[in-house]
Image (cartoon, rainbow, N blue to C red; front, side, top):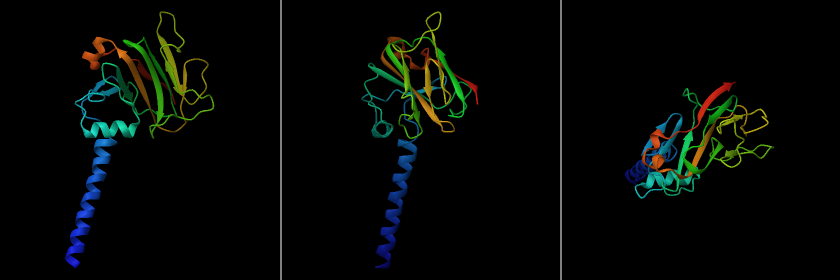
Length: 190
């Protein structure tokens, strides 16, 4: 009887550790097929038939409603251009020209993958709603302090991420997502 209990405890412990490792590494961690373009990361497996069970599980956990890559490419940034983790204590300048896509948006998410609650009820900027600079580019502020235009609020002291969605991306982005012209993320102050 004692031997049966030891075997059951060992099997139960092994299964629990295996499930925990799968959760931490495959689902909560990075996804296979990942590429990097500056501070932005994407996975070529999201929304494709080549997506394995871990990619699909990660998409489900992170709340993406992943469309096919020819329809939408999702880039996420957890750090600025210098490689420092994004922090709600700091203010960032996100700037650039329109990425090659029919429509785009940049949204801030808390570390739990949900929108960041804020009194202004502002969560993102987009191609149609962003105020333009001379020459057609844009500059947006991401930080805890109110900014008059193109501001994405975050919670002071908390880490966050930015997700850039490119809807109907151009052929160059689809074929070479590593070299897409994406916005820069520059730390302004902390």
